[in-house]
Amino acid sequence: MTTYFPVTVEQLREFCGYDEESDSYEFEKMHVTQYPPFGEVVDYTENADGTITLIVDGVWPDRNTDLAFRNTLVVQPFGDGTFRYLSNSIEKMETEAET
Image (cartoon, one colour):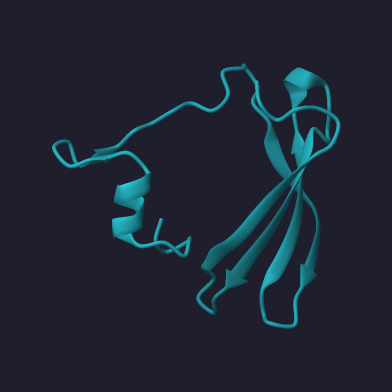
């Protein structure tokens, strides 16, 4: 996680349900449908600061829509092919993202 997100191990443990005894984190399934929504990159912009803004449409077969919601992601690519997520915003489009 710390490779891809600007977060420390301490922050993850504090805010993400870390259990020291089992050395693990809580898991909560977000969508309980047969076909949960998935992302499809439909556009991108290379920004002047070297970051990339991705436009990702939420395709949701169970709701019969290819634009349930839209994510706007900003990532920082590195020379070795890795990247870091910097931000993510979600915009409601054709349907609610929650089940």
